[in-house]
Length: 483
Image 1 (tube, rainbow, N blue to C red):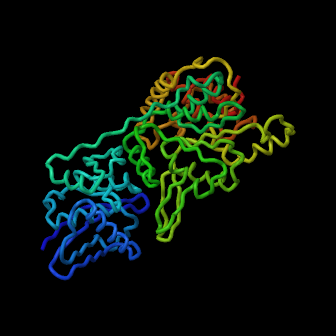
Image 2 (tube, one colour):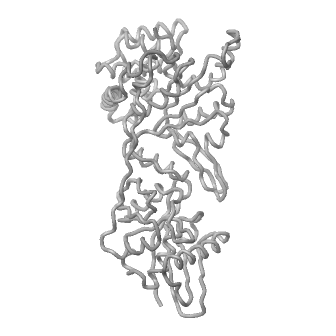
């Protein structure tokens, strides 16, 4: 009788794979054969597609229906192909011109009533389809916030989609506005912690907030003063979040704040049933901030496990079909009270030392330590996020210009040998650092961290290179003993 083919995609880990769905209608006894999907999913998909087509007002084709999803050797878990299978059948039956499916891909899960629902991994699938030359993609309206080169065709129901595919000019998708971020001006007092937050944002450093102050408020405002994500990082971040079934809007860096009772799988990620990849907090914070409040309360295994993504910028997950690498390059923000007491503290200095010593493995990666205090003063007595963000953007631009031609974009990324050889501060600043090394205050590793912060302070001042004052301030920021 007729033949039609539709394009779709499936996501395995963070990799999308283009799938061609072919439908053939031929004379013979009524039947519906579906191949190319896992055996456990074939029957449910077949029944779901049939019910959706009938309940959308279309007649079920007479004769034998054969549908296959190619390539056959590509695993196809989930319900992403539902819409493509239904539309291919309808096109083969003459409900819409077959040539209208050329250059257009179809993504989404079908409800029994014909509703089109979101699926996991939408951003990864869109990226893959755009790279393969697909011009437009039909998706559920809830997923229209994704931005790629291809045109997005929102459709809430199967009947609506078929009608739009019949027309020459499908309705464009509408982007969702990004809500404004919390303002730094709301944090009263805490001028030292606010300055530390600005330096952290300007240089891409890791920060430790110590004290009984508003650490959570400060952490929530860090993404608001960071530069917007560039196109490449934004695409990667959206792909990661799409694997969890959520959709981000705007270009603001993400903030992920897992509770200390979360499992290791929630922090680092895991392979779920059918080898579906579930990103953890370290990947959901990629391109943004990972905030660990009450950091000493986290299990030692999790604190030690964070060292690998901090050093490599990725996390490795093992599953039945092999290993998967997820990006996990973030700025770490730790917060802790001086002791675990609630209310009146009865801890001895030794108990406090032991409590904070749980963070020893992570504090090796911390460039800046700042003390926080209980909120005091009037609301709005500090600078707004917009003012601070402007200074941060200018400092980042100076660093990026200086690092042109290198694999680094922020001061925090520059290795120790290179920062001394190619980006040395003035002689007085180097003398100060060398003095502290000889006195045992600094090691070669911690001296590198101080030099990185000194460069960030110089960038914030628009200076040519760090001075002795910059090095001294950076040393105080590292030690956490600012005046």
